[in-house]
View (cartoon, rainbow over the protein chains, first blue to last red):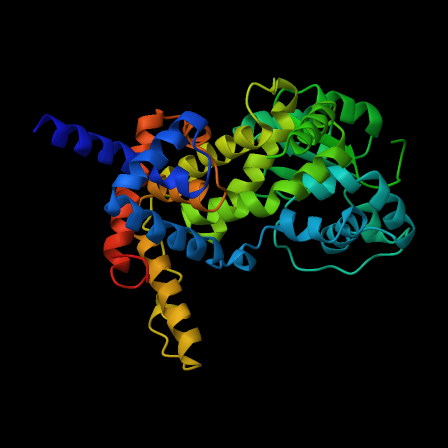
Length: 205
Length: 186
């Protein structure tokens, strides 16, 4: 009776460890013990074979990752410069001359973090056009838990005006008319601001 | 993970901690597919996967300098992703939409073998969908990401025995759903 109980305990223990025998991550002592049990347990041998097959089929199971339409993911797949280019083209009204520099200046910051809202596509505007004056020249990303009041206070403090946003991640395209570099420094000092970067060549970086 | 790969991860995260965006981009590219698959299997809703993936990478960017290397970087990142996924599921608090329903009732014809494989996949996906997010996470981390139970416990922030128990019940459920389908399963 005692032997039977001992065997049953061993079997239950083996059943708990079996998945990690399947993926071969058992520690050496456990692996040795498991193999010894396997030699005398037909049920565990069958279960191991079945789970090896299950693991193989599970690993081959297609996941519809193409259904994930993360702007971040999509844009990164195209590379940083293309990312910025697409992003700016889609979202921010900029002159052609600005776009190239913007792609460099904003590449990482914009590319990596900004999942811009689904605004209708806009065409580019030439420099000097009225619309160009309205273009955003900085991107500000707030921490997800930022309140509306904190956000407004941060932007008001540097007289920044929201041009586009927010995104799901809390990013805004803003227009800073005064000294942009100083304004962005002040924004970066705000605890709720994760990132504040220039996105065009207008004004000192 | 090979030692050299872990070293490469440590180098990357150190650079990310110094606000190196190229390093962040590289890190993102390296983990994007794995994290997306993991998240999809846990939350099963593309719109939440997108949000959680972005949130996860934001945390990685913000907290990179606090990563001390006490665990593997992958463990740390998967743990962040899991926590974010659980929070998102609670926030949405809505029934999981079954994106595969149409596919399951499809009667698409084809070579018999291919049809059988396709049918088995649909059965497996359905069986997985019936598990809780916690159980799906353990199955995915074990059978796709091939992690040990200690690392999984670290990611899920639960005792090792909980990981083993979840996997045991998940396997039992899958076995019940796939009874007679896998040739090796008796």
